[in-house]
Amino acid sequence: MTTPDSNDTNGTDSNGNDTNGKGDTKGASVIVNAIAVLRSFTADDPLLGVTEIANRVGLHKSTVSRILATFEQENLVERDADTRRFRLGLGLIAVAGPLLAELEERRVAYPVLRELTELTGETSALMMWEGNESICVEQIASRHQIKHTAPLGARYNDALSSSVQVFLATQPEERVRSLLRSGAITYTGLDEASLEDYLLRLKDDFSRGWAINYGESSMDEVGVAAPVYDHRGDVVAAVLIPAPRFRVSKERLQILGESCMAAADKVTARLGGKASGAGRGGR
Image (cartoon, rainbow, N blue to C red; front, side):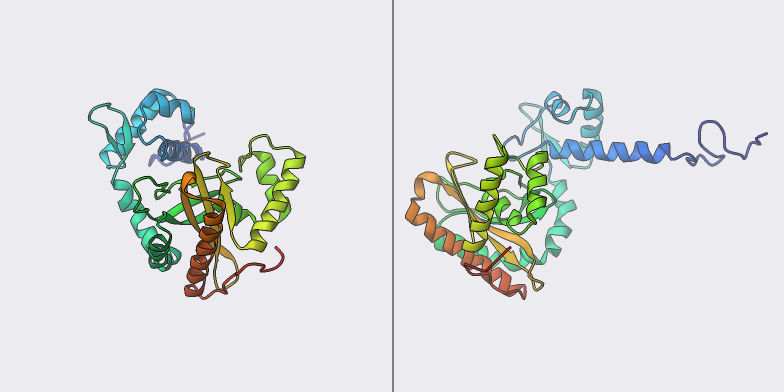
C-alpha cells in the first residue's frame, strides 16, 4: 500500500521530484533539439525561417518556434526586420567569449595571423579540431575587395578541405577509414580506390608540412593549411590561408604554402612545441 508521501504512478514524489528518470531524459532531449537549431545556421545560410530550420533538424515547426522564441528573449537569435527570418544574435558572443579568451592557441596565434595576412595579402585563420570537424576560432580578413573568409565558428568536414587534411594526417589510418566510410567526413564518390589514394595524400601532406585544396571542394577557392603542435608534439590547431583561385597560380601556391607553414611553426614555438618543418617523418 502507498501513502501520500510515497512515490505515485506518475513517477514523482510528494516534492514533485522525478523518480523514474523520464524527466531527465526529456530535459536532455530539449537541450539536444535547442543545440540542433543553433547549429542549423551556417556561414552560407545565416538567415533562416522556421520552416527551413524545422526541415533541417527534423522537428515540428511549433517546437522550433518555441525554441526560437526563447533564444530571441536571450538574444541568442534575432529576427530580420525585413524578412522576419532569424539569424544568430550577439548574445552568443557573451556565451562564447570566455571560452575564446581562454584558448591559448587563439591568443598566441593572433599576432602571427596578422603578420601572415600582411605578408601574403590573403585571409588567414586559425582552425581547431572537434571530433570530425575543423572549426574556425580566429580570422584576419584579406585587405583585397575580393577575398575568401572563414568566419568564427565556421565548421568544415569535407575531406578535401586543407585544414581537415591537416588534422586527419596525424590520425591512425583505421580512424581515417572509419570517418570517411561512415560519412562523418564527407568525400563525394568515395570508394576503396579513392580511399587508399586519400590516405597516400595525407602522408604527402604530412611529409610536405602543409596541405593543399586547389579548387577541389569549391571551384573558386584555394586553401592551404599547416599544423600547429603543442609541447607534447600533438597537433592542436592549423593555420589556414583561404584565397580566390584566380589569384593563386601554381607558383604562388607554393609561396602561400611555405608562408603558412612558417606561420604555423611560429605559433608552435610560442606554445613551447617543436617546429615541424617539411619532411618531419612518419605519421
